[in-house]
Amino acid sequence: MKPEELRKLAGTLADVLPIEILPETDRQELASHMTLRKFKQDEVIYHQGDPAAHWYVVFEGLVKVLLLDENGRELLISLHSRGEFFGELVIFEEKVPRDGTAVSVIPTSVFQIGRDGSLAVLKRNEEARRHMFERLSRNIRKLEGQVEDFAFLDVTSRLAKYLVEVARLGRPLPLTQDDLAAAVGSTRMTVNKLLADFERRGLINVERRNVRVLDEKSLMREIRA
Amino acid sequence: MAVDADSVMRVLGAVPIFGALTDVERKELAAHMRPRRFARDEVVFHREDPAAHLYVIASGAVKVSIPDEQGHEVVVAVEREGAVFGELALFDDAPRSATVTALEETQVVQLAREDFLGVVERSPRATREIFRLLARTVRRASGRIEDLVFLDVPGRVAKCLLDLATAHARTDVELTQDDLAAFVGATRVSVNRALADLEGLGAIAVGRRHIEVKDRDALRKQVRY
Image (cartoon, rainbow over all chains, first blue to last red; front, side, top):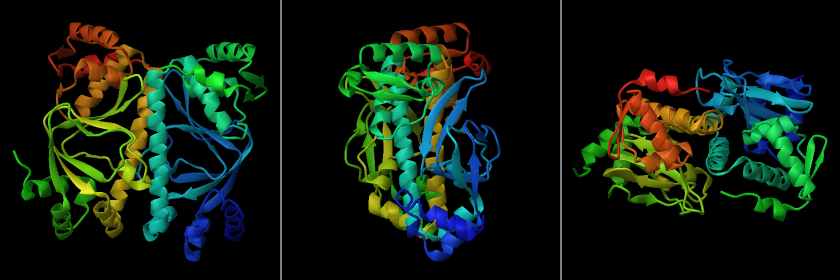
């Protein structure tokens, strides 16, 4: 795809990505360091431990980032949908390998953007830097919230909280029960049992790759520190 | 020891963000900084407080923690001389995400938001260092989550002691057993048991309000995923 076409495509993300804060020349420069990559469901975008030279913006679809331990256990640390960044720490740190594995949850296309070009653009644009600071700060707050949940909450509470949070996004996330287990740091078996229990009590409806929250208030009462 | 202008300069020079400034810029900045002293267990700021300053530790140590409604807390980080804290809320204009408490007699210098942002705007190198600091914070937070999910309590205690001893290049970790419990997200009882086991192995010596790391390799062997 030509840079011109890529720019047009990226421009359609304007409601979630303030591309207009960049002057024309910088938009051109970014586009020249950018490619659009398509992934089928469950394809790996990058592996934990890989050397890193690019960062990504989701154009459409959904991406999960997993942390893997030596025994192959997975922890789903974050989800990224349209207009959201992932792998962006590469912009700020040199020669640090990927600390997680990024996988497409459903068919997904992402903009892959080179580190060096992005650094040059950031260097020139106060507004873009401020935007990045804000995104990183938000990211850190979110992670610290997760630290809190994992330290204080049991599995039942974590699952209830996760379901409420996902439901509040207002759009269904096509997560499997394996994904849910990895997100709350538990096993598929435990999550399956808990979901069945929530469903039996009329709190949720378990569908294929979706959990619909029917009674948010009661689900919230399952969250106990 | 009072914090005089010279020692403020010395402290600033050792912090990567401010080390990026010229001598003149640093001197000007130091003139705007106010030294403050905190006794052991004194709170520097509370979670949810409005944020107006960034802090640099001139001497001593603080813990960064998140309290929950039930009065539990989880310790997110321990910071020592030369470390910066409180920078997060300056970027996204949000209230404090954590509570910071002095672990021992601690001297800090505080810098107002506008003065700090002035530095950021003036110096590309300082900006790069702040991005690097934020990126490290992101990694640290996801590392904490990983530990909480993948390690059992004895493993988390061993890892926490190792990390603290390594990060601060010393063998003494000045934490109470309550702090340690809050750091690893466990009860004091199970932390006590883990410490007794580690002491039995000759890996550490437990004193009042501090733990001495005697054998790093023995500790490392206890960190099993």
